Image 1 (cartoon, helix red, strand yellow):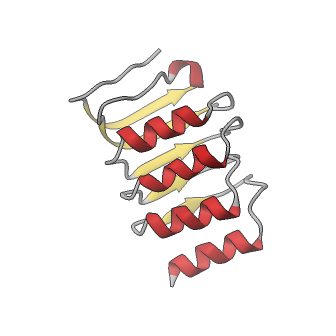
Image 2: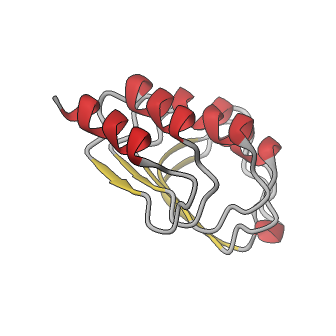
Length: 130
């Protein structure tokens, strides 16, 4: 179990499995977060990242199976993101549009295995690139 609190300054955190993730709280200052085997994470975890990790520039989430659109939408609060990897996450077109609108610094986006993304979602990415 990992619980990181106010005043922690880290460049990179790698977490393997939701059970080891814990809740990141109180304005943790990190730039890169990699979370693997995230299948049992719910919306509260995404909201915790979004509310407490405002300095994130790189976020890799793999297989976030229990998240809903509300949880995924919380990621749009991470306006400093440059790299976002949502491999096998349940992101929808509407949430993708919101992330593209809010995260103007976004340069790399991986949606491999995101089966809820349609051509409309891809159009959102194209509009963001213009």
